[in-house]
Each structure stands twice: as C-alpha cells, then as structure tokens.
Image (tube, rainbow, N blue to C red; front, top):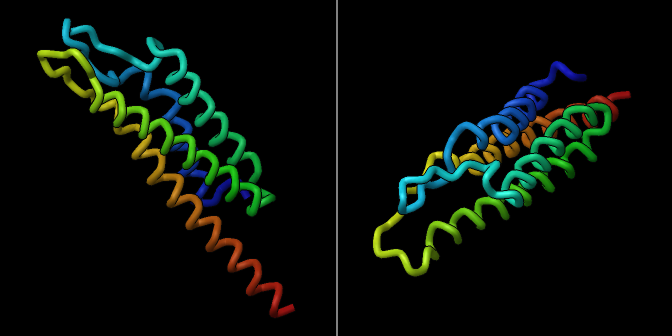
Length: 136
C-alpha cells in the first residue's frame, strides 16, 4: 500500500535527489564560482535518474521484491555519484589554492541512508506477509 513508511522514505529520496542538488552548491571553484548540479551534465543526469528510480520504486508498492531491487540499484547509483564527488574533491590537480567543498556533495549520503531505511521497512513487510502465509 502507498501509506507505508518506506513510501515516505522513498519520497524523501526523490525530493533530496530531485530538488536539492539544484539549490545547494556541490563545490566552489578557485575563482569563487559556485558549481551546481545543472552546471555538470552528467551529475544532473545521475540525480535525475536517482529521482526517477525513487518514484518508480514508490509506484511498485505491490511488488515488494522488485521494489527492493530498484532501491538497491538506486543505492549503487548514489554510491557511484558519491565516489565521483570524492574523486573530484581529492584530485584537483594544478591548484595552488584549495577550492571549497559544498554541502551538495553530501546529498548521495543522505539518499543512501533513506534508501537503506526504506529497504529495511520493505524487508519487514515481506517477513510479515510470509509469517501470515504460514498461518493459513
């Protein structure tokens, strides 16, 4: 059903990855120019795909196993995005002045946390359904 707690967690993931990257800066370059997700095509595309996966997972509420798998794919996508951000922040070659990291680099971390919470709730629902099936 749509009123389950994992739907709330997935809605938060959709909002975090769909809205916040375009308002919070990812990093600040040496000249003081703030870089947002819409400035980087691949990064914005990955954020859009993560949002679409969260919405698709919400709509798959009748198929809990498939919802679980889609959430895992979304976690892997967010891990790749987090890895890109870590790589980008650690390998700024040729800089004499260290650029500033933005709060937007933490968005994949929050998304992963809420996806784990959603998967835990899905697992709990699946276990409940299996236990009820044994009683019949």
